[in-house]
Length: 171
Image (cartoon, rainbow, N blue to C red; front, side):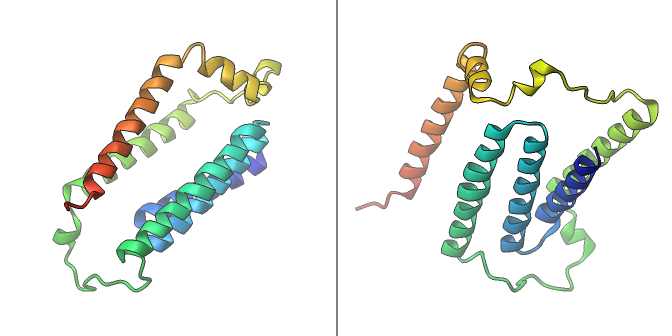
């Protein structure tokens, strides 16, 4: 329980660093830290396969891809090119206000749940500890969730074709 609290605190601080960092490279590094703490939590839940997928796919491939794209398009400079004297009105855009409102709602709901005792502690069972194995994931993925799995693959295919079409240069 103590390690879970430590890793949770690190994950929350890293997630805030992703959102609040003004430099894209620092945001990507905070994202890497967040993925690492999530992998540690998966290991604590004895879901070793999910932890390795988290490290290899997300921390390895996705963050490296983000950093590569940022450096490629020139958004990866470490200096802050924004005006230091920006007013509060320029900072308060509707996405930021919406995000702050939803974050406050989430924190308020979690606080109420903890105070009221409605968030029951998670109890492990013998069945739950087998849920992180490859066989258990494949069994559920290809029986109960086969339609969402196939729709996700179709969505990724459409996104890939769209990216190729947008990146194609006219000859």
